[in-house]
Length: 469
Image (cartoon, rainbow, N blue to C red):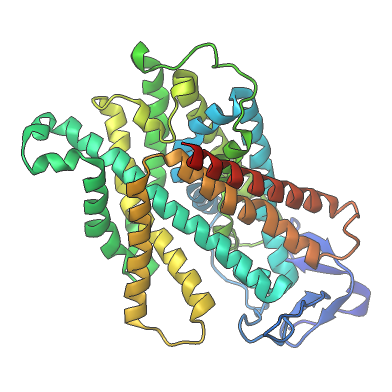
């Protein structure tokens, strides 16, 4: 590795040194190791392990001299990130406006977009400061075993919550489409089960999503998952077009439409956060750039989050302004079953869930394998048992509740807030030099405090809503 001379020991250049748009991160106490250059940090002690750092064998160092020669363009990276952001959570954004109020919802959506944009870029900075190339590695480097436990818990909760949400969505969408295409099927014995929510959830999960979840190679789902972004565009367009045309009996109260704030403000933050979290993919997208510099990645992040915010605002306003107090967790449920364009959106969304659920199962399974069986050989039996337990558990929860809003609230409030607002700035506070009261660290401190407050309040209030229903 190229040496850093003493006169340049207070800065590290990230990216290609010949690029004018590279950024320089000022650091103090830079020290050189045999494999990588990392800032001087304090390695926490673990009860049952040695100090974390270059002595650790669990998460090996990355040779930063081996930069990728090929990569994607800025436009391709923007598509990747936009696809990561605009996911299933967009369907619940009108519901978040119902919870927060239209003006507070707008403010939250804009502010949280800015915060997410910042923490995505902050995660890449943390990666460069630590010399690690994954979210888990960065957390382990900064906080040792406790960091690995934290990231494992929150990633598992976020992915498993997504699985539950997708099972609920399958039950919300497919029966309506079947009943619309075949109206007389409700009078046919046995076949009428295809219009029953719980039967469809079991049928689709067991016969489609479960076999796909058994794949060991996630790339086998790539082609089927490529339709995800198209599906989201269809849904947004369908809601925007059909919303203003629904019959009066489906509309909500006019007098609450322009309320500034409503009582369930913190739950709304959880729903919005669920829709926007894509931090687990950000480092992969950064590495996929042809010239992976911070300024180029910042352009990707700004464009992607900006486009996603516009799509989310359009979706939220199109749904909430029509249905107001009647707005459901899945906005498509507000429309009549015989609406042709909405049924196309339902079909696209439900079909997309068939392949999205296995992707989340893959994440959950990987968390289990990395944390509990990192030193054990691969086991087909363990693979089948864990997959069966994950898919079966998500399916069971979806059979017990039909309220997508509650699932989004809990998942977003507990795990998405941690992944987006707590862990990235916490790592930065650990890695960057200087006192926590310094000007460069105050935003990170504020973001951590905000994330902790929202996580506690949103989770507690969501659980209280379930208990009191």
